[in-house]
Image (cartoon, rainbow, N blue to C red; front, top):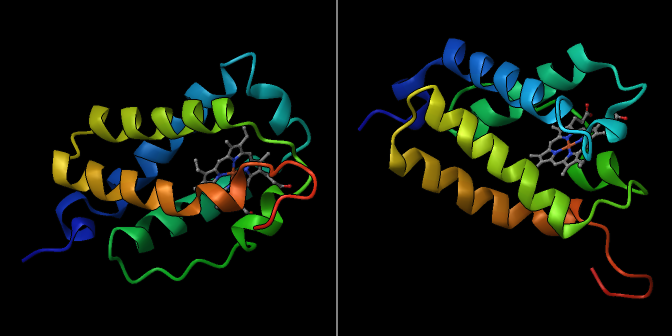
Length: 123
Ligand code: HEM
């Protein structure tokens, strides 16, 4: 069985990530989060992360996801929107449904690290 990574390849992952951030940054609700962000670095880290999630040999070298998103006040609504944009970019670049569902599962797993918790809430 080829891994998801072998099915799509690193070049497609890079295209997905480019497409994803083009859509995110074009959204007036989301763009303000990315003011002053080093986009080439962000994209590089997202490519590494997505490759490793898909079973590739890349090792994610970016910040821990909870640390990277701390104090941004990311709402559930914005999280769903961004996750939907990633899924849409994967589909647009030809990812099959099984791969998409794997990514959806991982998005569910990392959600708690990225969405801001109400003050005093555990986790
Ligand atoms: C949907 C799941 C998400 C994943 C997998 C994800 C992943 C990442 C990764 C890998 C980085 C790079 C960390 C680094 O360079 O060390 C990052 C940074 C960032 N993310 Fe996310 N992210 C997600 C959702 C969001 C959402 C919903 C927002 C805002 C609406 C957001 C805003 C940002 C910003 C502004 C940065 C840059 C932080 C900085 O460089 O200072 N992310 N994210």
